[in-house]
Amino acid sequence: MNKNDSIGRARFIVDMHTHSNNSHDGKCTVAEMAKAAREKGLNGICITDHCDVMLSDTVDVASKTKCSVNDAKNADNKYGVRVFCGIEIGETYWNQPVTDKILSMCSYDAVIGSVHTLDKAGWDISYSQIDFSLYTEAELYDFFNVYLDNVNKMLDTLNFDILAHLTCPLRYINGRYKRNVDATRFADKIETILKRITERKIALEINTSEIDQGINATMPYDWIIKRYFELGGELITLGSDAHTTNNIGKGFDKAFCMLKSMGVEHYYCYENRIPQRCDVLLP
Image 1 (tube, helix red, strand yellow):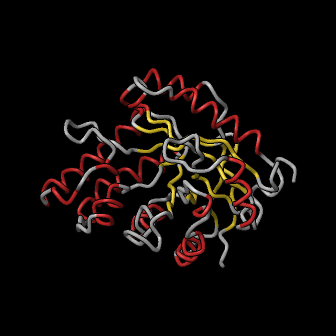
Image 2 (cartoon, helix red, strand yellow):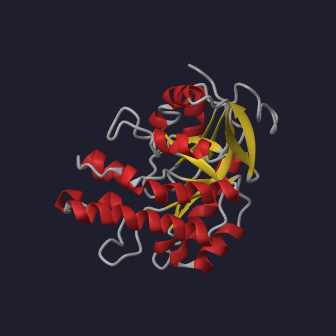
């Protein structure tokens, strides 16, 4: 398979959000992820290891990122699949000079922007580590509101390609802790985010990691994805957020069916930070 083979063709299936052991929570090498993608029938994966800018004072995030990119480039086409090199960069507005350095030091195929930690005192740890069972209902709604504010702040300051797992805190609030925060209460604020990414031609990720577990839904929810298209959005990527080989491409069949039900014919993968159109496939 040549470097440009199948990009944009009908049966090109790419998982645009995966992690290797270059992420603090990744379990497998890039080579293992690539081999698993081939065995699952995918044509490509994008390695988007974490770069948490908020940790840059204590963690050498630049070296980890360079290792991730090098591993991905070395694995590309070596195992029968394309391996694109990306980055999932978070909390970028905490340290803009570090963010600028990270984005300029490598040639990425895709830059994913995400928010995992809020810039509010008391909430400034990864929300995956917060015990939301201790929060009042008012505090939960305030937390989600601040999260959306932080997404907007990222949009103010970051040049990126793909917005990762919009509504992600609900994975923990509603999924892990069985609370019931209603995202529709924030429909106006979510719509503002959708309009902004549409105007800037930033892709909306359909994150499939919670399908058949936790909240048993995509991130964002289907009604948000539908509204994105209604607002003129077109750029959609699929990402399993796999941290192990088992989860590569997880939930893609259901995501394709959802898109087909919305009348959507195409999704996108990225190479050299340029979106490449692929056909939505039914299982």
